[in-house]
Amino acid sequence: MTITYPEAIVVGLLQGVSELFPVSSLGHSVLVPALIGGRWAKDLSVSAPESPYLAFIVGLHVATALALVAYFWRDWLRIVRGFVTSIWNRRVDTSDERLAWMIVIATIPVGLAGLLLEHTFRTVLGRPVPAAVFLIANGAILYGAERLRRRNDGERTSVARRPILVSSDGRATLYSSRVAGRVEVVEPAALRAIDATGAIDAAGTAATAGPMSVEPAVVDPVPVAPPAVDARAPVIPEGVGHAGSDGSEPAESDARITRHRIGETTLIGSAQILALLPGISRSGVTMAAGLLRGLSHEDAARFSFLLATPVILAAGVLKLPDLTGPLGHGIGGQVLAGSVASGLGAYAAVRWLTRYFQTRTLTPFAIYCAVAGVLSLAWLTLV
Image (cartoon, rainbow, N blue to C red; front, side, top):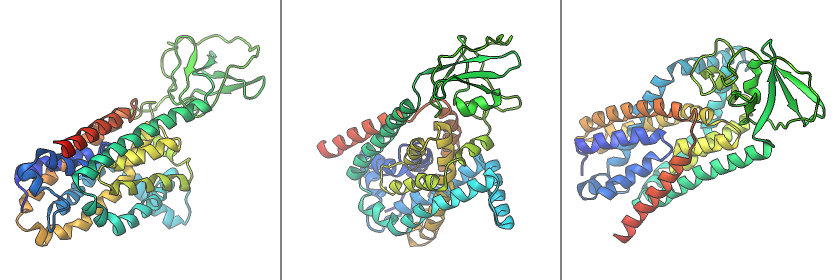
């Protein structure tokens, strides 16, 4: 039993892309060969005795992790520097230092679970039918997280749009009925903390997507002159870049993430344990947990990729001895070809997904997982 170059390249590309897309790389690595059949089903089976395939696909994680490091290298420099300075100063002050320790602590549960359960889960459950079932479950998790997120937002927000007036000096006057008769004056730079979109439409109202619950108050405000600017333009502080959907830079995203408690971020990181099941996506369940803890789609995706990097890298490094031993005999070239394909696929995937989640949701991926899982299950059991 061996792995051919076409198999290695296809599986490498598939692993790199599906590892970061919320659709489960292991699930696809199990299902695709089984659905193709023939030699593919024989060569690429994680449950076959003495099969090099499991070591091969997990070994590809090194290339995937390196692609993540390459994409987020500036962020990892900040995070590593924050980790070192926090140890040196024996305190945690900055968001970089806090984020570094959040990643460390949130990685511990999945690290321990991986060492204890990874081999058992992937060999016993790494079969096509269980993978199809878990892929359906993954779709349900993603869809359920989106539904719960919308319901929670609806409970926190009593109206879809909240009136504001913008004075000539650029300040925004926001009327809140939660504090009777109170008129709050908010600087434009603070609008993003109140309104996740920061957008003001032509009628002078701000779209509600954030956690703050605001209603129009029955008050008699002092009229203010509108600014001589296009009221439809987003309110973005001067000097802010374009990295995020709301104009936020990575450091600002990290600052929002680190406002959460360590226990919350550890819970988000622990969700990765479910990804030991073939068909459950690491990035998908982590993002779902992040959404349920109040993160935006963009911040949840970013935190998911940062959390995944050390876990994926460690998993790949642990499998390297298998690939250099008897299981890897005669497939060194295939491993290299698969790793190149995996790294390129992962880099393209993370580049695309960071832009996608600025404005979009997990719902399309939930639908895909449910449909693909049902069709695969039907094909495997009925045909």
